[in-house]
Image 1 (cartoon, rainbow, N blue to C red):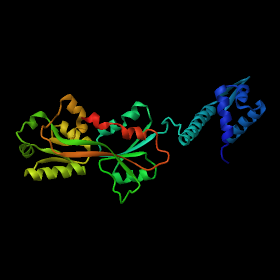
Image 2: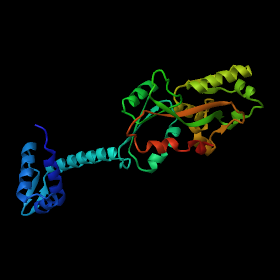
Image 3: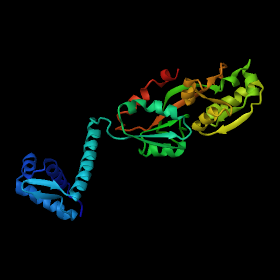
Image 4: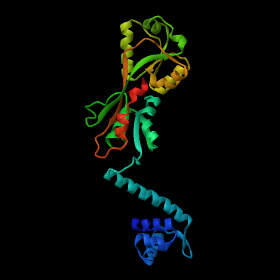
Length: 292
């Protein structure tokens, strides 16, 4: 037998009022009818929910557990109604997927408007294909990537380019003291991310300059690129956002030579009749102005 949610609603009201008479008046029921409903719920659950002392209804341990469940059940129902009436105050969790190699600093900046509004977040990381499948299945609200998804595999998804940042060489200041970019790349070891646009751009740059750079590390995680740069393993080839804290503190510096490599960042969404109310604000947030 299923739980009778009318009984649960009546129980919730009595628990809040602590008095059967007042609760009955609030529910527009007779006191005897309400008492019968509460007794039926107790029989269904197999536990007494109240200790009755005169006119006072005090929750038992089982009653406190039942009230906690009742509050959550009816809160979810309220959220459901708010979602379909367009009156939701972004109470539903925002479910964000991000490429596991994506800069944590970048993710934080993207989510800043949601954090300022105390929104509940559910964050997941992984490779692009599983994340995009979860987005298609509506298990995620948005996925953050550095490449737009292939149209032949994900024709329904929409890629919003939310930022475009120049890639530069960053490292300890003493490593940057070279007269030319070719000389710098020929002499100093580099930490090279595997992210496709950066790797392709760097390989092309090295070929144009006629140099064979010394690769200190090839890394598929921007967080590790950051740590290796801090440890002075070599010069990191990344957008500045990856090393924002180190650059601001003067621990690392940026080479003066432009690389003419750009990394794009995308927020990928699925067409939905009822998108999360925070999404439009996050996608429209002027992130590029913060990075300059």
